[in-house]
Length: 244
Image (cartoon, rainbow, N blue to C red; front, top):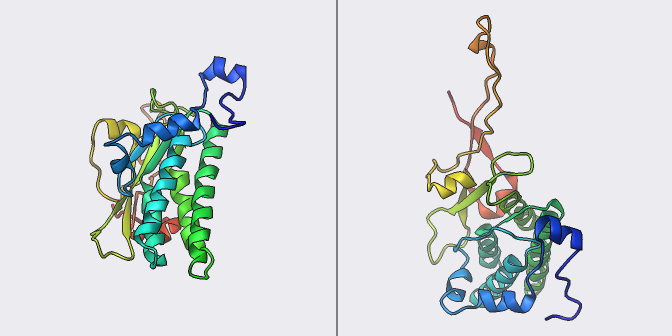
């Protein structure tokens, strides 16, 4: 066990939520199991942590992914930036407690920022704003508050994830393009395949109409879809309206 490692925040949280953090040594042992390690270290392998806590498992995987990419692209900062964002885009987490969600998001970004800053220094450069803003956008979309078993948030809304699917990714790809598609956790369980670029539209609670009400009086909700974009510009979250 790491010295001064905190595994329990309070007895009350343990009693109410069963919150106990996994020791780092166990995290290291689990994610490096033969057969598993070679898969989850790859940037395109999707990993979902259903009880993310403050991100111990996801942080471990991200650190090793970034280390692998720095070894693969030691002389190419642009490719490192693109594949580092791809490595983040396939890491997902669900966490019940709001404070843990915020801490997990911060922890993942700090790991990304620190590693990126050190790697950029090899080229006498500073981290690019668009890359870091894209990292923030992706992490915030991928780490969500909710009850994994119920598949809903505290507000009783569906848990929604974003898929960041790379387009025409090849071995020599330098600038990665992605298309973002939003899925509810329920749709993922049901293996539903949506049109690429689909934006999740919350279903409004409807009130019973009287005989004198008209459906024409109901507000029309515009539909949008995400546009293909460079992964380094994911922070722009560009959409277009779908014509009726």
